[in-house]
Image (cartoon, rainbow, N blue to C red; front, side, top):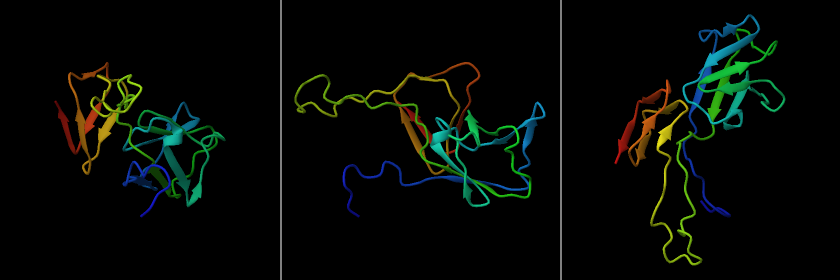
Length: 154
């Protein structure tokens, strides 16, 4: 398949289906929260559909905090509806630096890649994914890293 510009970065968009067996948890009697299987970087990192109708985080229909989907006051769907969550990319806690290493030409491009050395938000490596990090890696505070696939630290 041809592309204009860069090709797709991800070929797998994991999804999660919630239904009446995934009853929401009321918080302070007003908001309703559902557990997520992945931790998106923000509400823009997922698509949420209720009974096939796409919801808008920008309009306040939902929010995300760590691995929790939060429907605001009065926005919680009842337990008979189906909620589909599509993850648009899994946060890898890494960054690709300018690969020219400060040189004005590209003779030395792609020699070094850097990754962060601290994980401070929940991270899940699903069973169909592999992760690679350059160590040492620090997992801060009570942050949870769940490895269902493979994670190599070199």
